[in-house]
Image (cartoon, rainbow, N blue to C red; front, side, top):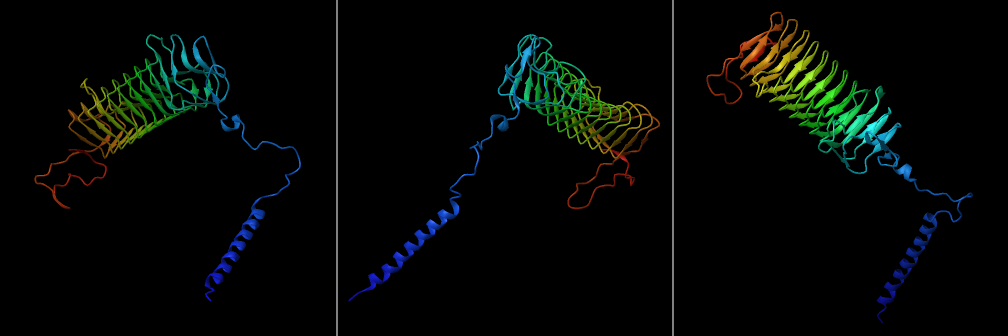
Length: 361
């Protein structure tokens, strides 16, 4: 008699019973307590304020007044929930309190024709501090795009300002302006007060200077082009480094006293006017080092004595060097090669072993 089916069935039944037992045991282990803790039942969900602790800009939270669509009167963190279109005779958002952070949330503040000299974002009073404005577009206002001039220690980040009747951004003293773009504004593209930092910004086709920074400021990694004034202008004791200034109607970079101008690229400045330098120092005690200045009216122009000009290169300018008497500056004319160079050697020595020499090529 064949008994093989009966022999195989028993282990399957045993396995099924064991699996069921394990599932039951797991249920007891992971089901948690059957009796809730003593006390009233409370919600475990967050309130709306906890989820979004900031304050929305709207007529209820930030009502405007005679000269503003919206007005921030208390410190805190605020945000836009939609675009804003200007009206005649009013600023877009007016701030009258210190310690305000305004997030534009990527929305657009847009002015209208004939609205008057009113700003997209403006301060209603002076002597404020710690204003932050970030992440949005401000364009076509009759006045400035963003003006926080009478406030200290501000942050302006990730803003695009275009076609405003005044300056694009006026940042105030000891401020940081980062990652902003200013295009085709009637005044300066970006202005920052003394002791400020401007980094990673672009200023193009503004009627004034592309970027203006007050004394004791740092301008780094910025691009300024096709501005009707200077590309970058910095006050005394400032540093301008790693920037590109090209095709500005005035100077590419202009500094006054006690500045450090290093590792910049300046090309075709003095565009249209025929009167501009790649780098122009009007005062003393400046260090101008490691820059490349090409195709301008003047490559490097130093008006007075008492500066050091080292390791720069100039080429293709109407006058490559205009250096006043009494400056530390050695200029070498590098002789062009007389044969093609292929591989790892060839050509002629640039003419000096002095590591601080400047070269015309």
